[in-house]
Length: 339
Image (cartoon, rainbow, N blue to C red; front, side, top):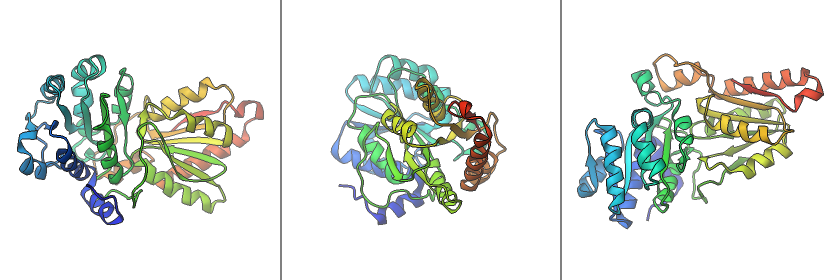
């Protein structure tokens, strides 16, 4: 039985999300012989080297043929296996869009598609390996659950949880090695249920994936400005935890969504659509990747280009708050902004 402890949290953090995936895969193989791990020539980068040695009959390397891999996963699922498909997020979603649409969305086969290095984690390789649109693509397809874990412990929690469902699922792994730790001890994880990490009274920050950490750090900076903020980890993008959104609408003076994804079509867009249907609502700010591909470089450099570092998030919230306060009260309840 895998141990969720502070010690292991540190180990998984150093390994990064892919290493955490490998740890989860080893745990799954012990309890379910029908678990299969599929990779497109990325065994090492999927954290599956040890799995390959210990469970070689449960790992299939399809080479650089991602579309074929998803198609084969459909066949394996039809035969009663539970395939976990691993490759770069940009390839898993946009390159395999037709196979995902047919095998996962339309046929509802229980394929678990894992998008490695989503966002900018592999951005050093250029725009082809940046995945800033994958949430939009996957959320638009019927029947697919979309999840974005906040740290490496949550990666393992997520993998274990989806192994017990029959839902086609896309798991979006963000962040590089030495991923910041959010959870240092065991906790209750449930697909579709957001987790409150910080309690405040004025502003509600809702984040997913790597931006949970940056949002928590931004909250510390805002606290120094005398602003009290709550932070929710919305690890499940679809289906959305609307109870938390309703709570935010009624209890806070501002709602802010932060994500390592385009401002178009991701978590912020989904929440904005829900909020808009409610009519009267507090001002809404969506902080994500602007409509561009940043220059290649380190992970941190690309986050800075996109305005997704904690101090930049803090500055955007303060600026939006200042602008909103200037507006006439009759318009303030309808304020939306994408940054």
